Image (tube, rainbow, N blue to C red):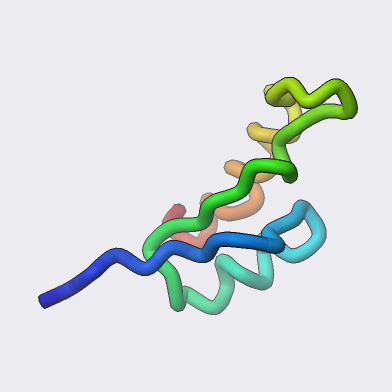
Length: 58
């Protein structure tokens, strides 16, 4: 039986490509990496992270 594996914790803009490149997880969870200084979700940061992991099938 296959179970989803999700990388959680410590995922940043600086290391997300390294995490994705391992292909060890079926998903990547990140919260603080997409927040702006005021604690709101940053559309720009979110798009950057999505584009960074897209080549790895995420």
